[in-house]
Image (cartoon, rainbow over all chains, first blue to last red; front, top):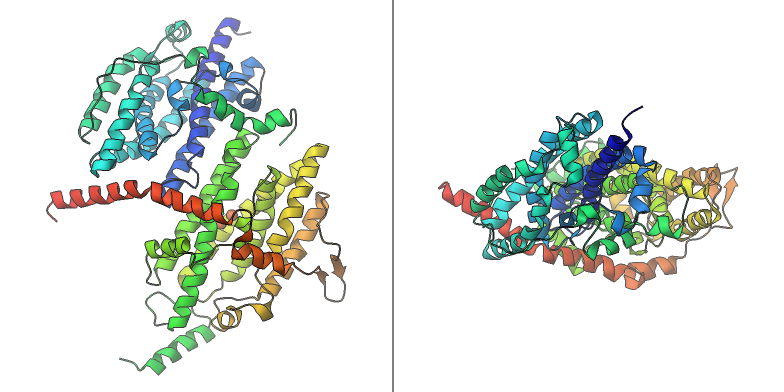
Length: 253
Length: 313
Ligand SMILES: [Fe+2]
Ligand SMILES: [Fe+2]
């Protein structure tokens, strides 16, 4: 039965959330055996596993309507078909860059998925409920790192501030509402991203200020991921991630 | 205070009675040194072993395999951490233990100097390398040093999970397309002999073995352990229709064990002595991560110092 148009919209929405989680999870994998301490290697893996789990749930859900499996969606689409935020596809950078990105995203996701818990779509609501629990832990950890890095040494403060400056122009995309999300918002299914902005900004500004870090005054911003217009980095990531499925098509692994 | 001889007698009695030696107990310096050598080597092996598997993490063929592999590598990091802590109970710091690795004074399992070249290697490593590690570690659950024995009990549970996952993963390839099956066989060909080498030289040629057996640090000899591994693995290969690359492998009715061919000990020595494909990369990667992380560790130390300074403690 169902509303075909609505189902398609929900699938597209789930695809966005799935792609955000998948691409970010893949970036976290790049820290394996490369973290500053063994403890941190384990912690990053923990977070990475959460993102991969979330990606699978969201892509499975999107795939139901789209008629594709999670792996077909992950491994057989080219970059123009990916719908993730640009923020998550940027190369992992140094530990400060990765941790600032994590922090800014965690604060956003905490608000976003708390809202999404109330979605009229049961599956999205269930994914959100599971995700919120995970994100609470992520946020505690990354906020803690902002303190340690911001109030640590001169070098750690400088690296962390530089990362904030580099990442800030990718933040507006997190709060962008397009036609699809506006329509799903009206249906009680999607989250109003715009509404989250001031709360997010206040929290982030205060947290960073308490760690001797500032929100930069910048005059640039980059968007495009939701429309499939990406940075050059995504193609390279996919080249690596999709290698086996592309080189040996149609097999079970 | 008891005389040195009495202390030694107490120690010997405990060993004889199968009681565990605990960190606060007196122990001969040789025992301590031997344990530090073996336990830190074991810890380093867990950590360096993350690299050949991590090599396929970003290229895993499905999201499920990627998650399973990430969780597996995370377990290995946990084993490393747990073993470093257990080693620290012997009065050495983690910095010193890691420094010894970087200086080349401490070793890690030489098998990780082999490259992981295809996805099938991930299955082969879980099946064979974790499989061999389990045989070793099950015996070590009865080792005489308490913290080491307890670490092994905890670690063995996870290792057997890894072994089953690895076997299942390579079994899928062995049942798959002709290319996948060839990939699986090739991985077995490359990892089989290095897995047998993991148990070390023959008992007669093993530098530390005799004393370690007396102290009950080691509970079974290299050759005994190797034999158990071969015995348990042959039928596993048969079930998935892969061929173990050893023409001399055959069941010996009289011994009730498999006979197998002689290991290429020259290759063993070559790889241990630096001539494996990945010796330099493995160590260089560990040093690089450590060096790149120095500013982060410094920041944490400075932060903690600032905090405690603030509260006036
Ligand atoms: Fe392990
Ligand atoms: Fe393992």
